[in-house]
Length: 587
Ligand code: GCU
Image (spheres, rainbow, N blue to C red):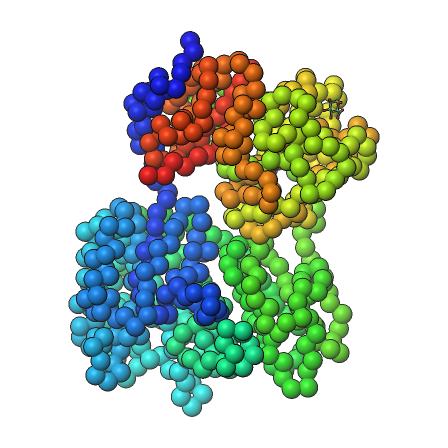
């Protein structure tokens, strides 16, 4: 029986039970100027609340940084800023609270909080979070760049003024997560030494270091971007250890699980030099994909820095401060090249690999309530127009998505090149390629994504207007721009290529439309003839709650009929899957 949209609307109203994405939450960040978000006009000054987001899976976690300079645990509250947050907090959100810098005694000051009142004010944040069904997390204040006779001071614990200790004691009494940023930063900064942390972590610049600070800056309280990334890393490492905490109740650990499990993996960025130089050079450290990265050298007198070389020994910058780059989603190496040093040695990179592929044609579509689909393919790009390549963009076979398909030249070694961007990284992504192979033979291609090569075999699809999707497992995806090259491995060339999808959110290509637009703008292409369309709708857990034939399908209307939540939607026409896509309907 054919149904129209109005019937669908009624169906959906009935079917929208428990389909919100339970893994999504917001971290509300409360604190002072060491945490706050800064304008680009003062770059590289940065607070950790500004960069902590790249340590979490961006598709699950939002950061709401409401930290503001000059506030103590008292004045943030008396300003009405905690009360103002109430309307933004959802059950299951987290409230990170860091105070101490303005609470500490500086002489008579309205914002000051004496040590014996610190717990009183902090507890207001814990009580508010709990009353909003949010999970509070206390973050102890990171150290200041204070030294005495060559020994690092910890201004938050010394001289009977133990703000850190008061916070820890309260956290334990209240069964609240305690992130000991104070101790982590103290231990590492002490080890790294005053000279290094002054110029590489704190908001301290020499004349000429950064265009926004022509006169330089001398500040041992605030941080440059690299310092705030270090603070965020210490925080992330503390979060990772919470599950083995001995003071938290099982219930609180349970509440912290979404936070802990949304942490992204870190990869080591090795920084070395081509000679043993005296002077300073960025320390080797680990970063999640997409975190801001700054590489810096401060050569000792008599040394001449020439350039930065990447893992392949390519020259990437001649600047002593190389900034504005992002950490890749894999281990990498940078070498600081100095005059008179040895030649650059290529870091051993994982060699190209061949991967097993599986065709979707074996996926069974039944009318039972649970259907195996590939919901992990979260974003698609149209492949009709490569940046360069031998072949043509064609529209002469129906059933393609987007602006057409790429018909690669039938020749051994024919290629097409696409520049892709991915917001997220993964070491074991699934890549999907939608294709048609109307010949009677399989066709093979080498698909190279960011230097990794996968051999993909495309079985025949009967006709050139019959489209199928092939899946490649264990694909390495960087959270940066990635070149994609497809190359025929025989004289018959490759199949016609329609679209490419990945199991990470946020895959895009400049000048190319995305899958959602493919569906909404070109619905007539998707549903090219008047044959009925079968629409399957799955909840966030993959359970199918709608499997219906429609005579017409209007994507926009369909979306507006959905209750807020996360869905997988799959469209089938004439027995073939036309698209499968994760969609988020916002409130
Ligand atoms: C046919 C078909 C093309 C296809 C070609 C091929 O000409 O129309 O779309 O690309 O075969 O063998 O590759």
